[in-house]
Figure 1 (cartoon, helix red, strand yellow):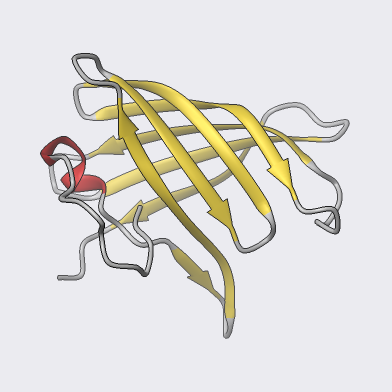
Figure 2 (cartoon, one colour):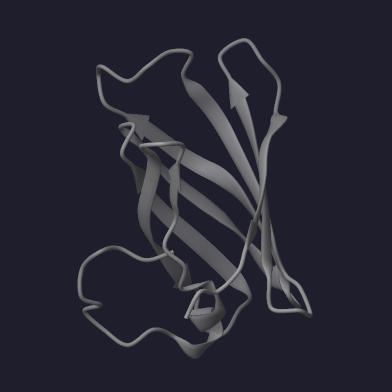
Length: 127
């Protein structure tokens, strides 16, 4: 995940395969996330800090095991005028496949609804 800004520091080599920009569209831009990936030094602990154009800000933490990363939300915040129903919980499973494609499954729990798969994405590098 990266932002449309210059990187203030070099990326940790462990996260270079994850330097993808996420944008979705269907005839017009729909969704955009900008964030940071942090690694706890000396461990396989990872944190995502993400801001979405919908007004949602999330912190997710988890572990990197081999080519897989599993994250769960630890904090969510939103603008006062965000659309309802509000997201209550987010879970992500990211896996780098042998062919170089990155797969991500995102599950969300909304107000009054259990954690359910929201989407499955397959990314491929374009450069």
